[in-house]
Length: 256
Image (cartoon, rainbow, N blue to C red):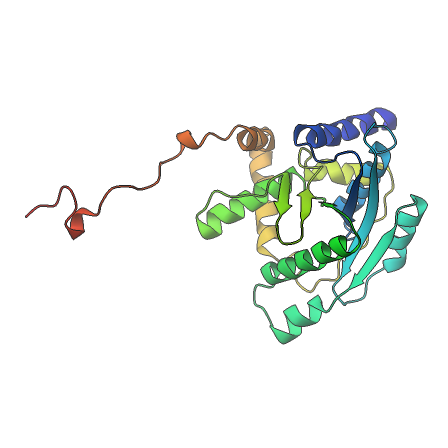
């Protein structure tokens, strides 16, 4: 049973990697390792897949240390067992976000600082790809957050080239749901390091998680339909940009 499940899980990841040409021969891939279930599952499955595919690629785990206590030994040991280099990038992100800036909504600033730190670290290590553990639920939550809080149809892409760092960002688990990742971690006894972030579990992202699960419970095909929508987006089905002149300022159709 475990072997068939593992084969299925790897197949989903391989399909995403193939569909979006995520990894090429000779790539040096950084894996953002946070200690959470998603990043641990990603590193484990990428390690397994590289033994099976003809494409040769290196892996290097990077942990962006925000400056608060973390179980680094578990992360380092997890990588050592798989013969994967591990870098603990110590930063003052926690101090900046919570003490210096005292952000009321700290997630955006924290994410930007962490993104910069891991991109720069990957570049300094000579790595050209950065793999993150975002899955389908994350893509849907990002879409809903953008829609609800900014009025825009936006989410992250499976592959993104970042001009500033020269790093290509990839998300190999984008076809897999969050519950599937959780099951994978449990079945294969992958260690998870608890986040000590002061706002862990009380963010807008957490609200979106609850919304997605509520909709999924009511509409079982909700996540699958969202994936199809992401893959088959046709802008012609949406409103076109506004191009008419304002009749209130003397444009066409103004009444005298």
